[in-house]
Length: 52
View 1 (tube, rainbow, N blue to C red):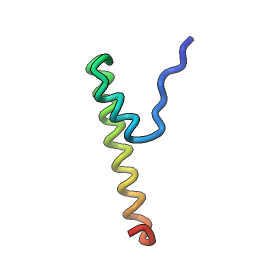
View 2 (cartoon, one colour):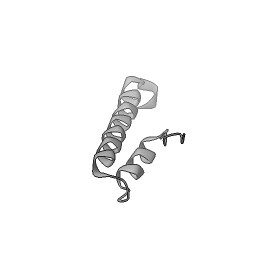
View 3 (cartoon, one colour):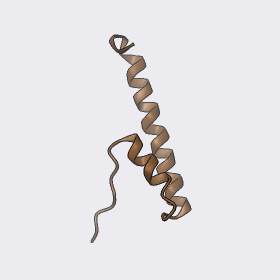
View 4 (cartoon, rainbow, N blue to C red):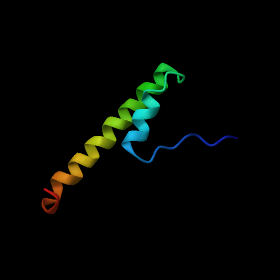
C-alpha cells in the first residue's frame, strides 16, 4: 500500500491546494490545512514577545 503524501510546512499544503491534477475536494482540504498552518505560525509569533 502506498503511503499518503504528508506536508510538513504551510507552503507545501498551499502547493498541493494549487495542484490542478488533484480532485477539487482534496484541493479544498489542502487549502484549509495551509490556512491552519499559517494561523499557527502567526499565533506562535504573537505569543512570543521576543520575536516581535
